[in-house]
Length: 195
Image: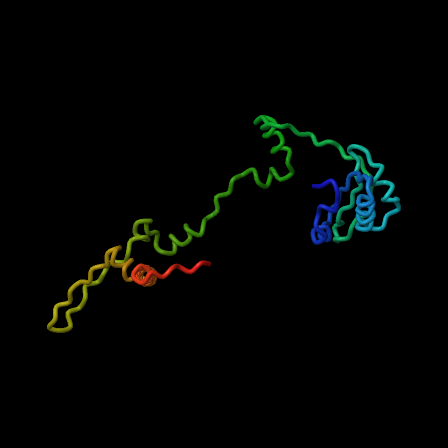
């Protein structure tokens, strides 16, 4: 939506299929160039588009759209009808009437509850409950194969997991390097580098 086609990048203009062009005025030499460029972007027409575009009034436009085969339709000078609308919510009776009048009402009026993938997976698993599906599998006791007693391993705590992670080790290494650098600067009195 713009007053002049110069505001729209050429790459975008090249991709437009449907065009509704309202009046263009040519008051300056730049406006005249923009008008000529706009006229060239329309398909060939029986109209004198330059004259037509400068003479359009309120509610009038030059329109071209893509046909079913993807080719531009002939240019048509049209008078646009103002939309029938309101600036608020529609009341429920009018909404129900519009929905019932829709040609798609018969197809979409009835709610359909098809079997979901979740339900199909549950049926395939033997209808286990949600608790059974999310619970970890039961641990089997370790076999005692030697004289040493097998001690159950405890899961590492959250702190142990964090300390063993590569990210923590990298962060600790980086902090150590930075602290060492600051200590050496304070001991030897060297200044920081400016970036």
